[in-house]
Length: 323
Image 1: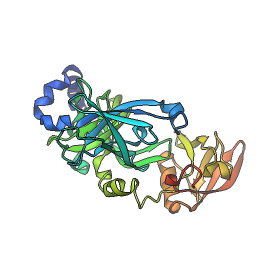
Image 2: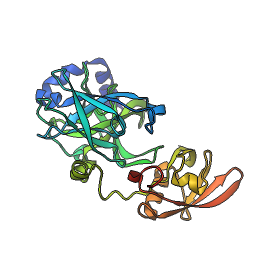
Image 3: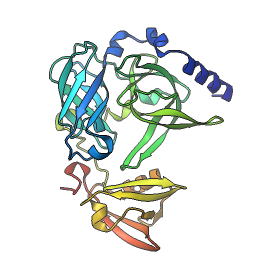
């Protein structure tokens, strides 16, 4: 889209209320977005960073009442409570979760009395297309626009090949529904983050997980609680990118990286002899070595010396120690 087109679009969206667009969306679809409140034990993996109480959204996606939401809102939670349009809180249980996408599924203890949202195709959503972000809170509806489709790499060993980036930012983004013009679910809100627009610099926006990433794992999440063919090797690290370089910021105690000798502030130079150029490239190269359990050869700048290390990767679903 031309510069003038983006400017007009952004100005219009920032000036008009989201509810002005509600008439274009079926009420049943909006009712399928529910509020989620979770309480976590003090020893949960992310209790210190994300807190013990978390609030977000979920979307009812089938006639059984299955709710699609995010793993960080639900995995390891002591209690999960969902609230539909009738405002009556209902307890829910975790059906399954996927580290690869960040999705999780819930099952409420009783029916929420809402029709499921129809699932669409995120691959059909193109840059420049309008979409609707929907949260369960008051005024939780906003027209947005697809600004970028590209890969995304997160510091917590998270990689999406084709994430959806939208502007302007939607404040109730966590677990929110991204709907196309047909009222179909095409994405789930994950992050608030800056989005670069050509000719305009950086604007506040969101990253959505594409719904197409759910289809290959949906049956497994319902039946087994995890994707049965998940094969990505896990190192047990947190990493950041700066000037196309990858730096280890933290290693999980007892995890594969710590056992191999990796430390915070190490810089990763190469994987299996291939130079690393950024965080996404690092993950791709690690995954390219083999499945979980494979030995990952790394060249690492540790202090002033280059160290050759071999990290025996683990299956993330078997715990931080690979057991």
